[in-house]
Amino acid sequence: MTTGVEGTPLDFGAGHLNPNKAMDPGLVYDIQLEDYINYLCALNYTSQQIKIISGTLNFTCKYASLDLNYPSFMVILNKTNTTTSTFKRVLLNVADTASVYKAVVEVPPGMKAVVQPTTVSFMGKYSKAEFNLTVEINLEVDSVGPESDYSGNYGFLSWYEVNGTRVVRSPIVSGIASARNP
Image (cartoon, rainbow, N blue to C red):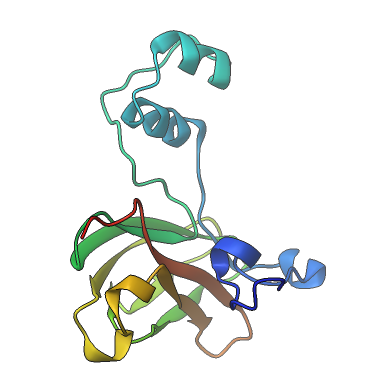
């Protein structure tokens, strides 16, 4: 607020927390200890560091991955005007009933996001569904503005419960990892 620049999800997160709705979210991006260990492995943490952080001695780095099953998506531009990233996520139904959710994506000019599949169905509580989100950033789009002014942009992926009231919203953020050299 002091700079006069509009905030992004990197400043304010995914949105306001509503404690009543948080008690019955419908869907969650479930994550297990192994997922965090695989992430630490992909970041090249040593075995000793992983043992200290995770509190476990029994692990393997066979499935190392930087794509954590996390409810947000970050695309990094590094000295390039275009990039494409695909994220694989797993949703877990925590509602007591079967449900269907439809994806809606809102993105600014210069960002394209495609969800596959666009509709996910859950047979009951604790059932899972996978989806992929492919995000394409193109700073060469006229409406983005001069490259020198670009520091990042954001949009949202929202899962709307069909014939229900729940909405699960996730930020999609793009940003520049390092200063560009002219």
